[in-house]
Length: 117
Length: 114
Image (tube, rainbow over the protein chains, first blue to last red):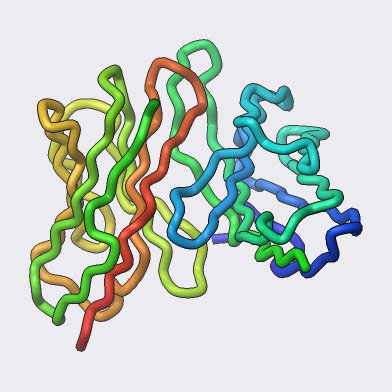
């Protein structure tokens, strides 16, 4: 399944570094998501973009900054992260039926394994 | 607040045993329900989903789940597991009338012994 791709697959960074995670979906969807997956915790929804506009920001610290330049691409810019931010960051996309609130199935990328030293 | 509970954190079964993984959610309104699976080294994949209609949903690889609205449950079942079913299973709920909000459970790790 290569509908949703993420790069890089692994990233190690120091607390003072600036890096970006990239997600690309090839499914023609209009909604994209960033999730954080930590051990023994539920997946945490971080950001939601629908039609390239941010519609959800679940109290995520400002050291995480999303960007959605078009409906196929989603970035997560990282700066001054903390060791507790180490996790698997997952991107997903779906076809949001705008106006109905009806959400379709989310398709996930393989994730970026982030380690903050 | 919306929450999704998966009661079994780790399940170990022998091949051919029957499987049932529990999932309960707390939201009382319209919901869409999902089970995702994550095989070792692979990304999350949809196993099955319920939006409306028959509360007994059949998915891929012989899995099925039953939506019981009165119990706020969406348990996953398979009559006879295989070694290849070893994976992490996640239940998820979205609020059908409130936009893009997905809530995942903590996951259940299934190990099937040959």
